[in-house]
Image 1 (tube, helix red, strand yellow):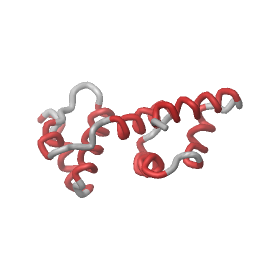
Image 2: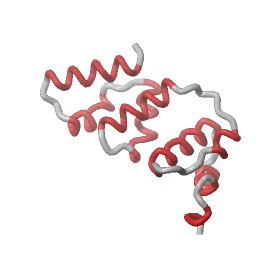
Image 3: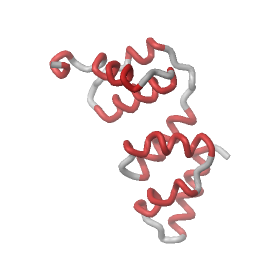
Length: 116
């Protein structure tokens, strides 16, 4: 089953059972399996609501997994710091970079005034 279809099924089942987004966030890990559960666990500190979770899962399962170092270094901070952070983090993880290198790479794409 595709991740979007599964998330829609889960969301509809929760609506029928009158489960709110807080319940979904507390209990979804019981229903996720395999790499979806792994992505959830790796991202859980960055997830603030059910929509964020859906976006992260869909992004990880639908985007191509082919990433190179230039993709990592070319990400630039524009308007959305949250989006920039997630893109750099996901790209760095796919490259197998250490957390320290990912953190160093985060500042590479920021405007010089913010680096100081």
